[in-house]
Length: 253
Image (cartoon, rainbow, N blue to C red; front, side, top):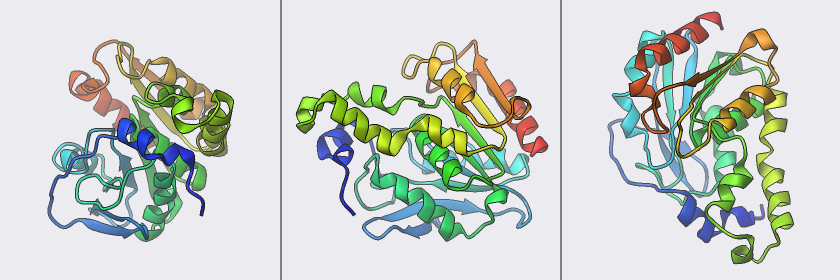
């Protein structure tokens, strides 16, 4: 498999901010050139499993005491996906190479797609959307502070000239792998999109686009733009409403 120019070391070094962090009993996923250390907690074999993709600069260990108890209260099992080079995982992060890891993770879990709820926060939304496009029978899709336009975000970190590309050539390569609109159109299940109106890192227009592009029927998708909070404190600032939205969403699946 030819490596995408988007996985060039210049891009990865500016886009990703991995850090090591240990936790007990990691759930190992063999992706060939990378060994991922994810987290899996099953409270009920018949319950749905939330497959959570965290944001940049975060690791799985940040969420074991943060979101897993919340998912427990929602009556869901927890699978916290880790990225290459993050936490206890080996390998080097790459926007494109990590797409293939999504399918490997789900296949390793071995659960029916209808029992899965994909949940992506920030950069994790890219991989949650990809998961929903690969498994269109998934039970649900949740996007928080998500990214609709990967090309826009990429241009904030690297110029096409640094990759020996024209801007048009770079856009074509990005669309080849990250056509978010097309991916969302493949998924017809229920969708919940949450974003902070004053998100200083990813404008809330991204959340609006994700909602608009979702292939679900209008009655099966929800958009919540919070008046308070920013990119990294959207949950604690809006905890009560945030949890209520999650609870209502899971209960309707």
